[in-house]
Length: 114
Length: 113
Image 1 (cartoon, helix red, strand yellow):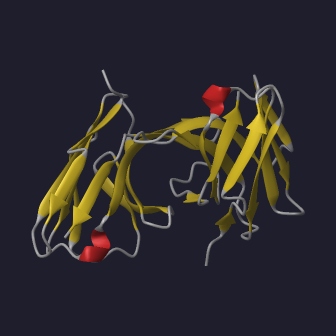
Image 2 (cartoon, rainbow over the protein chains, first blue to last red; image 1 turned 135 degrees about the horizontal axis):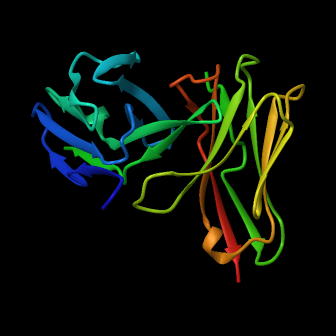
């Protein structure tokens, strides 16, 4: 009954491959996100969807393509993987609490590109 | 350009004492702030928030203080417990209801039994 679940938890792949990370939330939230935590531990937002509509698209290479088939799912597809894509990718969903959008995070997907 | 900074990468505190985690920001447009706690191999979990119309918010052992003129916030944990040992992130956003948060790099708190 995990609130925000991501698969896979670990992913090791070669440069140049294409891979996907899936995310599902059962909280009934309208908004979902992808965050990247790099080797310096910065948590940076990549994308956000609200009711399947893209609302945040940070400066992310075109090789990254999010897809939201419904408001409970947000997947991340990465083409032509590069060494610098190695990171932990966190999915999150949010609900407004007192004017602030409070994020609920998944456990993360650690991607290692060799 | 890191707009949210947590200058102490780590902090050790004795059990029962107060833990004070600090966060500084540079963007005066930020007006919502959140604190998250993260255990290894887990995602960050929400702890407490504060908006710029307040200078203090309290929830049990956790209190967040905001000093807008200094662009500084702090999280106080009293009394500290070993289970509080984790990485703590502060995050800031620019407007009510905004979906975009900027996170600091985190402070690793170790509470010694």
